[in-house]
Image 1: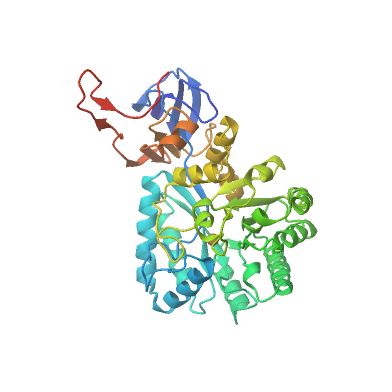
Image 2: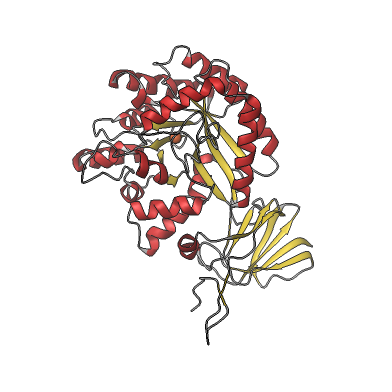
Length: 425
Ligand code: FE2
């Protein structure tokens, strides 16, 4: 009757003692005490079972290139872009594919089964586009990779970039990207947003722009993005990524901006690990945190996801594909320490980005694809606290990764011999 039953699961919505029945790669039942035969039964022992982690913002063409051809000395966004420019002529398709596949292995091991990756289209050879389209096909059985045509050097500022971007879309890239704050002038930035939104509307594609990744409070391209989303009827299909200038804007202006974004159906992606390190580099003290206003965006009804953005590349030397690390950093930087706040941070790396990416069959209802992660934690808050071990990762009902439980062996007189840091009440 079932291929697999996961018994005694805790779910992210707080339900406990739930059995999940799986057949033909799909969830077919979610009940307490599920009756019926199963080819295999796994006891979750009351631990958390969640749909997989989803990364709404990544750069897979640059990942795992740290140190090539040198490291970022200043730690700034602009030196990172310059460094990427030095690396680009040295890239080969083989190396791009190899690094991307290696990163996807890390992702699967961490229960991260869907990634939206920007891919630079400013190199007329479109080497990275070809490489990542190939990777997208290769990983399709175990990971959903969505690609954004990203004009890293500015769609107007970089000669030929608009044509390259259109060619990338013709080749099968899924989403229109942009970087208005990197254009030569504010006016060019606004014009780039208009051109790219119109292109997306013509082609029926979503938009996801790097927008206002700056400490300049006058960088207000997200306002233009919301305007064109509204004007062109793109509600629900437009995402503003980074939005760090909002951190430095005055409160009055933000009180006007957030309702405009909500009305235009624009989603937001914050990248806490990266922007806490890249932004504020020109400040003395106090140093700005450089993350957008996550609780305020959520309170305005705007979906907010957390992205990893970078792992071991010209902008960031750390990372491992662990979306719990990303969410935990977002939680700290945004001071989202209430129970509801912490649960929203968990959603920002699971259900919310799944919605932003428009993932089909994501979730825990009967009919959803049986993509699941069993965590060594009792609930989402504990998963965040422990950056919990992914005991099992399932794709379409098949185990694709397993990790041993994290346990320390103690040698203390009169004390238990093992500790796993899980809090049992
Ligand atoms: Fe980015």
